[in-house]
Amino acid sequence: MNLPKVISQLKSQSKAIAELGSGLSNTEIHWMPDANSWSILGTLRHLVYEEIFDFRCYLGKILGVSEFSNPKLGPVQFKAENSNRSFDDLMKLFLSERERSILWLGSLKEPNWDATIDFEWGSLSAGDLLSSWLAHDLLHLRQLIELRYALTLKGSIPYRIKYAGEW
Image (cartoon, rainbow, N blue to C red; front, side, top):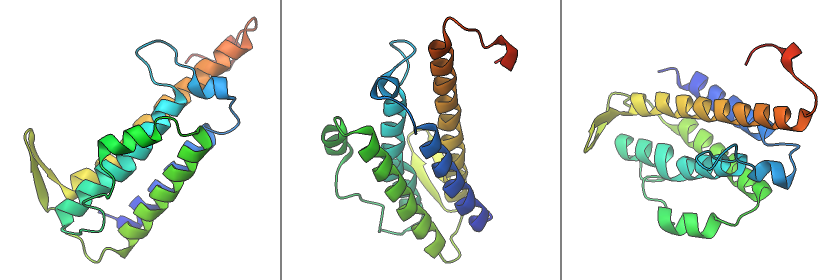
């Protein structure tokens, strides 16, 4: 595992997430293509939650580093307290929590990427989790791009975007 490269990618991906959320109206931030889809706000809320309660927390547990393994605020309380938070505040929280994650990762001395944690569904190594953290960001970047594309398509009516190429 090339930790400096992982850290660099986490930094880049957080910047991309911030850029894909910028310049949007309140209506666009809340817009969902259908009832089963997330909005840009919902996606960001999920990313903040995962930053605090999932990847960093479980990685701390696997590596035996207690700093982030037991967040002070529980997941249910977090969701309740942040359900009405503004998009800008959530973005600031995501970026500050990502920075905390990056600083913490940079402080790790020879982590054992083969150390594991057991779940009901199987075991997960620290290396698996760190790789999944990167991939999780990319999945949600794709989701944000799809939402921005749909907003562009919607906002372009009555004009067509066929000239741009196939989606």
